[in-house]
Image (tube, rainbow, N blue to C red; front, side):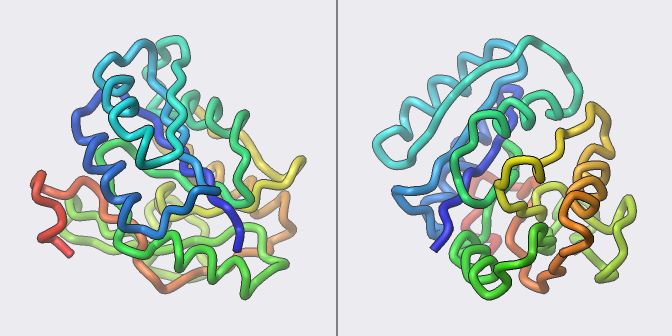
Length: 202
């Protein structure tokens, strides 16, 4: 089974704790890693990561302050990622239970596919679930936390410093992998759950 690097940019939100908690239910293995990158010094995030080091393989690092909606922090994570697969999860989002197991299964069943696009539950956007239209790489039809990419040298693009960076990343990934994309029906991520008691949302 492939290992997974989960790349998490942070601006120091306390919700990082529930993000890391969700990984414990998602099928996280000792071969996986969580790469948390602060937008500048983030003492709250650093302290939270330290609390989870005996439970998860957590690496905390910082970049200079950029305020570029996490693009630079994701790129910093990409530079050091060792997993076979790359996943992205913001510090106020959570994985649904067994999501990493499902991601691994899809990757094993589709060894020639480079980019997997899973669906994301946008709680904050009227409970919308995207993607809505499979096969359409367009702004509003994908979300960065649903993107899973094989970590192959020369086939991993950079994240652009703009709000639509997830779209740019998906388009460039598709180009590098010659359009070898799999649109996956499963919803793997819940974005911005409205309560700290997030497990009751499932």
